[in-house]
Length: 379
Image (cartoon, rainbow, N blue to C red; front, side, top):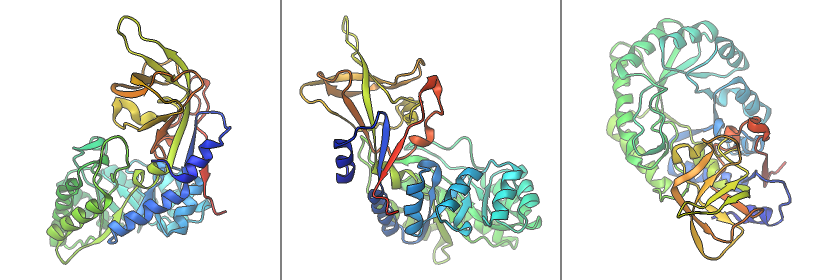
């Protein structure tokens, strides 16, 4: 459940809580697993999941590419040794100045899903390879992504045709079936939609080359999920079904699946509210929604929890330390924690290596951002 390296670090930890510790060897292991499961797909790590320099360095060493969403993420990757041609600007919402910045550095590939974004790309990155993000359903995903991004297949055909006329290179399409996607069959409909766009554009003389199948591959939280090999097999079968022998270049964007299981977020109990008149027992820890655990919103991501106490347990409500009523981690989901758990005891959130530090507040209520310690760094 916890890697031996992280267990050793936590056993001797004297750092003030909360903090995150990430085992880079586990990141490497997960990378190799997804490469083995999807040898047909070039992985572009979604930097937003874990924007830690040591994580980026290790993935550069392994030959990964990177999905970036801002000049800051571009700079981070380049500073850690990534080549510009290994970056994909996958954010569909970009300032024209940021597009120009990336293009001048040599970033070759840009996403869009609206006419205005195509116009900006034509102006700031002439000749760049561009791909259109399609709408995709997020059913069975713990963190849906279906409302803010993407367009219909008909609109995608129109936009990619315009891109060709405006001196851009229409390279392909992308989609994302939702983060922590628990159903490996969810890629099939979106791959079918991608094949439809390919076929309609081919009829008018525009040849696409790439399908970006996004991320969504799950980490290991409370609920069981299929093995990554099953995702690889189901996606490969869908590609065969809809593209046949004419399979395009395939790009994937793993994020959570590479880094979540490598990390443990250690927190400390700061207060306990005892039950009265049959009420709930509340445990308040020093890491909340504004201190790294943002994905507990709606109890979407349910972390496994270990504590420094043992003995008889009862369900508790878990909450963060801030003066905000939204800062409740789990109320419907009743974690069974020891009755002996008290102020000063530690609470470890497992598989917390993704979307924790990157969501951590800069200083809400005066609490500092979540510090991170990476173990196994070869530098």
